[in-house]
Image 1: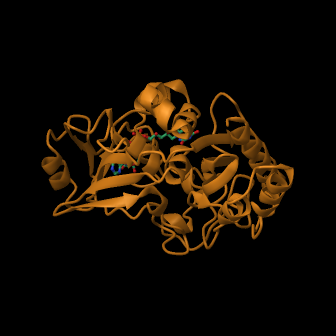
Image 2 (image 1 turned 30 degrees about the vertical axis):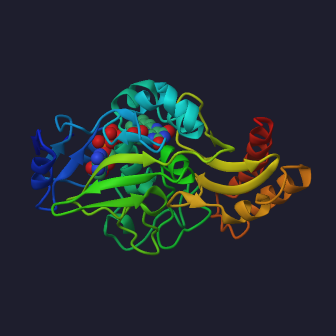
Length: 326
Ligand SMILES: Cc1cc2nc3c(=O)[nH]c(=O)nc-3n(C[C@H](O)[C@H](O)[C@H](O)COP(=O)(O)OP(=O)(O)OC[C@H]3O[C@@H](n4cnc5c(N)ncnc54)[C@H](O)[C@@H]3O)c2cc1C
């Protein structure tokens, strides 16, 4: 049952920030994740602050430098359908297209997608786990087939967002407003690993609001892609996924940014893959070396060892696919 709470609908950003001042209120973007968490008792709040009436938080527009600005309340569907997104940052369009179901994409927003809570069944269920203030992660010795192979430290969730790895690979930045100032947070620095704080998903304070996401203009020769493998094609979270943003100089990879989904508690930067392909053509030997290195250092749990060959195959497939785009 949904517990009782007040819902407020501020009409200015300043008012929205004021409503968050007590540190207990929660932001409502599209509500697809927040209301589920409240309904399931994952956490509670006295006040839900809807951003639906705050002006200036929606829409996709070109920035003067050729980049893109995406308002925080822009829906995932709007991103899927936007021609500029498809043309300039194809991996984001691909990632948005595989988020959840059509209904959820129509309602869910890009900022909400970045800030959504993890999907671990212990965290979402009746378990007082470490992430909820308890003493242990039940997944470590429990049912852990959907949990992490990298970055598990006290808590073994995987980060759930598909757009986060794509945005991180593209070098996107979140513009964040707080009660006294604004700041910019690169998407690749937005999420908090459990080794730093197992009860926190993002670096945002409770009284801060993401107002927009800014994508830099793609460098000449950039190709990007996002692909996830999931158990159900209709809708499902990633078992394994990869976001690539590669800049080519002819056939040679001049620079590479590679982030994994379904791998770790945060979008996981695959620096070994980046090193294996930078300065190289994507021939068979380079692709094989990159596929081998993607799982170097992985620490699978009892039931998720299948992710190792999955990631190796995914990297090999996606590097082949992005090479053929040239
Ligand atoms: C059945 C189901 C399947 C799903 N499958 C996928 C999937 O495959 N891939 C995927 O990526 N996601 C998936 N999701 C998650 C869904 O995409 C997200 O719930 C949605 O994008 C979140 O957007 P929202 O606006 O509804 O977020 P909300 O529910 O409104 O908010 C989510 C969180 O973000 C915070 N928040 C919202 N807006 C802001 C802001 N502007 N600034 C700071 N914090 C903010 C909220 O306080 C809350 O903690 C699924 C969800 C469901 C219910």
